[in-house]
Image (cartoon, rainbow, N blue to C red; front, side, top):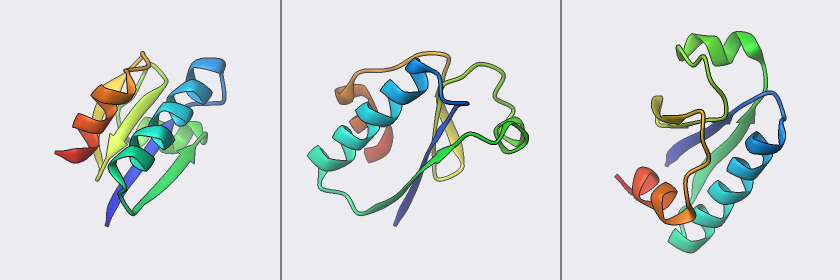
Length: 78
């Protein structure tokens, strides 16, 4: 099972990334562990300095922007 994390303190962009990621997971029909991480200390362990960020199986895929649902599907699917 994939582990997908949306990193961010809760800003509008962070919320949008969570919505886009939920949509991508639903469209792919994946069973995954999707989590929203707002703890700054945990975010920093990934080396992320700009939020929002998307992490798939411990690998940071994107930071500082909200990709499209299609782009997120590609990031999660790989």
